[in-house]
Image (tube, rainbow, N blue to C red):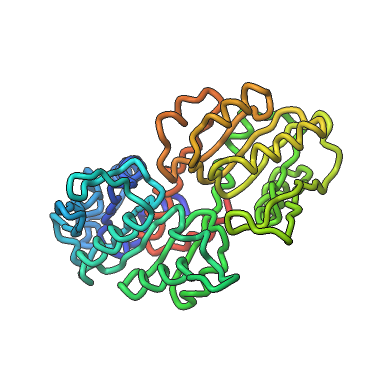
Length: 367
């Protein structure tokens, strides 16, 4: 449904957007898109569209902290009857607070706690609450393989018990975690279109998409089908007789797929954490005579900094790195000449605008 068609349907409630401190940058861009669309919309003057056109849909909300490090969520304006969308980036490590004079950087736990504080401040007055959490909190701790916690499932249940109607995430590590909340709406969005658009500006025709491991295979097959190109996969051969740092060490990366000689290659994954496995895979691809190598991941966490990527780029291993602005991007990442920023703000704005009109987003999820 186009923006024009949307304006012919009645909104579910007055729109309210609460970007937590972690998502302020993307929240501002999202708000600007919706303000622009709605100010151009031709709507009638009925009671349903009283607050439809505004200068901003962002609700004034803050999470101040006490000297002890404790905090509280405060709404500085009413949200009664509003259709509220909370944006949170649990990976934003740039934010800090003080505990007894010591500086603490905010962890995913702190961001999740602030999200709950804001929902608690709403205290049931909103008509509907939707949480947009691009990187799903604790999504890497989604299944039990020993005596261990199931953090992601617990977090989802906690949010829905607090009154959250719908959770939207991007490229969930394992979408099956939605089984924890079977009666609530859980959407995992693929940023396929935005990546393909960014790639086509930089890549020639001779192209192949590579999955760095078994877990990313479904994603790689989808990209390959959309682009009409070949797909290949690496699998990690591990030594199951040893445990190092809680995991079985990788002995080798084995490749399954057709000849790579002279082909441009895209390595697709959901996240770049330290980036070591991506660089290992790129090294193996170069050994097989691949041409240019593009690394594309929804979330660029770069937990060990950019030095290894600088080195890989200088050696000619990696041509470009593409990640989205769904999570915090440090300045040191943005200034790299080989880095391509995939902007998702317009897409998030489309999702919010469509849902606020109580329309299906299935078409948006398929593009």
